[in-house]
Image (cartoon, rainbow, N blue to C red; front, side, top):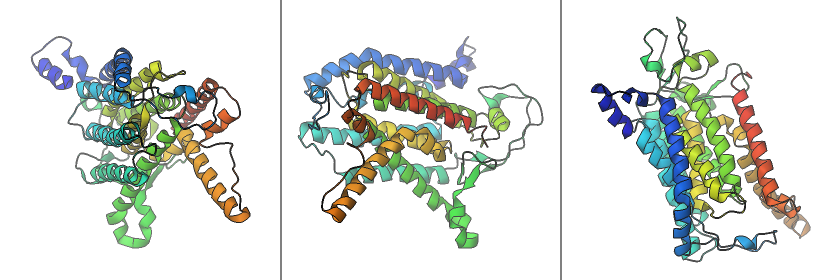
Amino acid sequence: MLYYLFEYLEKHHVLGARLFHYISFRAALSFATSLCITILFGGYVIRMLQKLQIGEIIRDLGLEGQMSKKGTPTMGGILIIAAILIPTLLFARLANIYIILMIVTTLWLGAIGFIDDYIKVFKKNKEGLQGKFKIVGQVGIGLIVGMTLYFSNDVVIIEHVRSHTTVRPCDMPQQVDDAHHNIREVKSTKTTIPFFKNNEFDYSQLVSFMGDSAKQWGWVVFVIVVILITTAVSNGANITDGLDGLASGTSAIIGATLGIFAYLSGNIIYADYLNIMYIPMSGELLVFACAFIGATVGFLWYNSYPAQVFMGDTGSLAIGGIIGVFAVLIRKELLIPVLCGIFLVENLSVMMQVSYFKYTKRKYGEGRRIFKMAPLHHHFQKSNMPEAKIVARFWLVGLLLAVATIVTLKMR
């Protein structure tokens, strides 16, 4: 909203109003505002949750220090969501289709998580919202995002960008007057493949057996992929949220990496230099990414070990969905197995444990386990590793994966 206010002030020659045109300036304000909201209002939110007796329900799994967390305020994801949306509404260009999709995703998945937490806390049902309803909600937002990305006239990519003159890198490439580019705006189902020189892949190739109709129906494959990614990453963040600070710290690292990619993909000069897909208007996502980083980092003020508040499914489902949809918007979703390696491994550990247990029970009459406990972070807890050390090491692995993801810009 402030963007449009300062745009009006600039027209009336108010000194300094032009600063709001720069994405980097608004992104910095977004981060600072988000961080302040979580830190300054976190204590109030915790006291409010305690007053409402919204405490964590703990099942005794025999883990060290587990029962001491019983009654710790949960549903702190409300604070994260507020700290993301308020700076975004203040500093982003709200007419931007990518910002609209991120706001809708945050509210949609936050609402699903809130319902799940509400059932657990107030209805005293430890299972929460039934899995099938969660899946329906996740599929729903994936469908909305996928269909919008393909059918909206505001969503295009520009292929084969090449500059004819040397120009200075700038936040706002559309305002660079001394640059001339060969640009071709197209509707596309293309995405980026890491580690390959010709690093673009068109989802319509997956239905190439349809011949001339492949291009026409490629969007169906694209939408299905968006749904799968949104669901998988959302559930991955939800499973990872099992130790103090684990999900929020890991998500902050992932958010910072996606913010870098959004800035590069939305800047015609950097996209040209790095030979990556240029996506007009996607640079605005940096403002949202900085709000996301500020919210998750600020939440660590209260969520780091020993946690004073948990984000609950209200937060974990939302931040996972945000990461998945964000990656899709900037056409970097195939980097998720690397960037979100922590979420992936946590998900796989549960799938492997359950599958192997069922297989061995059917074959030997007694279920056997691969890990001492799943998801993976509980395996290390069972191995008597201190919780704070597990979280710190997971953060370090997440940081290495983020660096590896950024390096893929040149490793092709």
